[in-house]
Image (cartoon, rainbow, N blue to C red):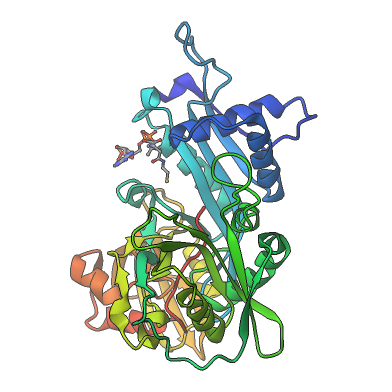
Length: 428
Ligand SMILES: CC(C)(COP(=O)(O)OP(=O)(O)OC[C@H]1O[C@@H](n2cnc3c(N)ncnc32)[C@H](O)[C@@H]1OP(=O)(O)O)[C@@H](O)C(=O)NCCC(=O)NCCS
């Protein structure tokens, strides 16, 4: 069936470019795939501008045979797949270039004909050829991407925080918080985020959309978002080291609720002090955040930790190692040791048996055929514990890892640990 389609790749075109209509059709197909309302031409154009700033590549699948009368034309892709390269913090301040996969849609009338499989396999192969060792995505459904070698590496949760009189953060401020014009985030958000990015394992470098979105300059639909408000945190030296972007839930919310759009703090003090600010907003008794860390310092800083009502954790960042040797060598390891890993790869990109030898925190990784295997696993399981956020012993207990040497999964847990619980604040 797959032969009925042609896959085309292109970069987002500017308005004066003859290829502009092709880019617009691709954008509209993505919006259709995610059930979005039809956006104005101006909004689509802003979207394309942002895509150009990110250096994105658009992939589309187009019908090559006859198209049904009165249906969408052959110039509208039946499937879309978007990519860009950003960095991933892999612990201890190290940043690894990573292929981000996004905008995956297949038109309902063309699904389950292998289009996603074809686009994914081709792109991951190209990413590996470009020298990238890692791919990442966030998933709409948890059942789609494991088969391509992706594993869950970080989780997030939604929280509702009771900020009535019982809300007390045990922290003596070292800085201060001031309200600002949201537009200052156009300039400040990327700078503050970059500091957090370098400190947080699991963090993915942000795309252009974020500074526009958190400053209210763009909304998910059309135009600006006039509801967005912003407060900045100033450190003891007066530098801005954190911000919160937030919106009032309206006078019909019960209790009156403030919704966090984005909370980025480059220091521990900034994080707690922004929460003190949020807790002090008058007339409001609840603050909600949909991207809260699972391992959240806020809970431990509160006099009454039950002020935080958290949802079940949700999978957030999915990783897919494209080159085991390169990815393992890139990491810093807090514990020395030797592990022989037999890695299966469903797409045949990087399977094999690898001896990982860590001495003084640095890895020497070699392919081997003679060594006795300690752990046998597929690349999705390795990608899951690569960042230290998922415990290899748990994966072994679940059957996702076969432990041939007793204690090898626990050794992996110590070697792959990172300095802080991984968390990813970038949705893409
Ligand atoms: C998810 C989606 C992209 C799948 O596209 P598709 O072209 O139908 O997928 P393929 O035909 O290439 O299927 C590849 C494999 O994935 C499986 N699969 C696809 N979608 C699946 C799903 N939602 N749940 C479970 N398995 C799924 C197929 O059964 C097939 O398995 P196999 O190769 O082992 O036989 C498509 O259904 C879609 O557009 N959904 C709505 C938008 C969306 O959720 N996008 C993902 C954003 S992260």
